Image (cartoon, rainbow, N blue to C red; front, top):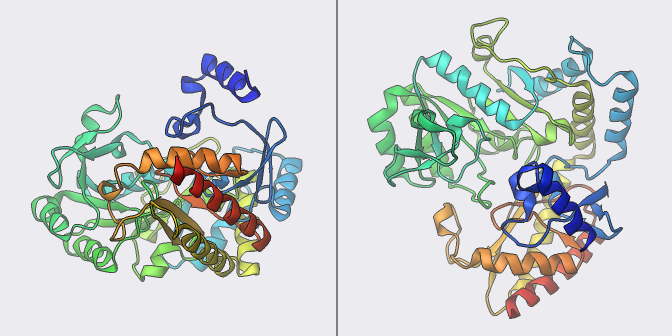
Length: 428
């Protein structure tokens, strides 16, 4: 038995599925998951000492790469000073002031420990502020594993929903679901439920069911319906926040959300989330207001200092421009290399994210447009990429991430490896 298979067998004996987050189990790609011992720059090293160019990057937080020296220095200093206080400290204040000074729609901010906590708490604030029962989300968007958000479209009619997880029960019925990129369905759900919708929660760059950039017309329609109905607009920028740019997708779209949820990048790779927004809405949160939310490790000093070091470094380097340019050049090279395959592939990119899938004639904007054979192709492609020293997110529905540690030299090697992997998957 290989080292990885042995470790996975041991893990399965003590942990559900052998993992602490489902996608890590390799269920979509088959085989035993790899166990990694360390990460440096753009490289992951497994327990057998093999190196892989990493495009998972912990699913997005590591915008500077693994073990970035500036972030490491900040984290080590935090450990030296004491890694949790359960009391007020200046480090969360510094990060909060940095964000509030640069993101105009984040007038106040509350730190939590995950993106799930951030969205759950933001929607609690929205219900309290509006005294309305319903939240509207969109099919294919993921907002964490809070009960009310683990829902999917039920009968296929806009507004109906059903639980997508056991144990959720009746809570699912407080969440309405509509398809992405469907103006008629959007109109219909607001016509029927608009007066009862507390908030619309939206990934402005849907990136949890593939990368599905939306039309500006559709974004504008969502914002317009919120304004007309009195529903709050909540942007879930856990992935896109401080990755597509300092102001995230809200800045790119020119749309001001009432509340915005952050995670991933703002913790520099440590467990940090946040919800922010209008001053009057955040004033509803305890101890200032009646909306209760608390957390023993919220605003943990290690994550606060690592997050501030990450954001400061990105700003000083003009990192968002560099990251977008590198990603665009890299994905253009992949498109050119994939053009000769018998089964063409599409490469979608936005800023520092990209996603590969079986070719479609029109841009994918909804999950139901993903080709039926995409999962089978990705399984072959993923393992071929591993054999060529590239680690991709182990699911056909997860997006890939670049970091500033993905230098031109690294990306040259990655492009060669992924081209070979695509050719092998194409011939299988």
